[in-house]
Image 1 (cartoon, one colour):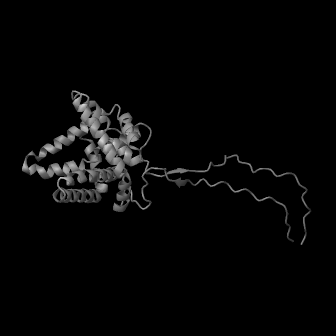
Image 2 (cartoon, one colour):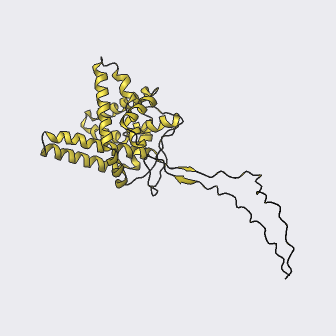
Image 3 (tube, one colour):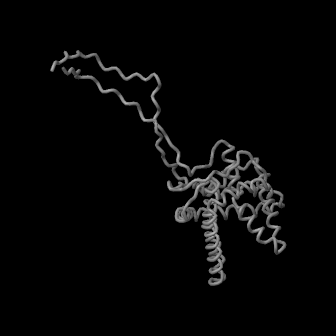
Length: 275
């Protein structure tokens, strides 16, 4: 004998709590296929020479692409300078904007442990090209003006602007917006900037002797991500992580543990049907 109870409302299914990733508008997006290495940003500032370890870790993540971009830029600059004098130097400066954008992007992604492709970085760098040139000119003019003002202001102005290129590339900001972001976020970190500059000078001095030239080149390459490490450290320490390239996620709110299905209006229950 089969007994059925018609009119029984279906039981509600609990809402899924699985997060659904959504990209951050305007930010550099890491391709889904990117392989990740351990992040290189320190939790506490290790000092100018102590940051070498973190910089080296970041550089080695995409060292092949960095060398390729640098070699291409050097080769094209030499060809332009030789073939189009005196205009070749001007074209090389324009090309430097593209090179700067690609390098900054690679260093930032290296700090975050992201392996990226040549085409992905080049495509993003081309989109930032003109803005990077504009920011390069603006920072350069500001630096020159600070030197003309009795030199002393230079020591306070330049360190506040060195991260402008990282804000522009990482968060796809405008020229003025990135300029202001660097100025505001480097407050209280001038000593760290000059420490990195001093460590770089010390490594460059190794080239005074012939035998020290290869060591100097190696150390400077491995130290080239120092400002990218500082950029990530400052943003993380301020409570606003700069990892805008990592997609964020949203999730539907989970039902409370005492969830009770909504009651249906009282309706007469039909008699059981015997079969």
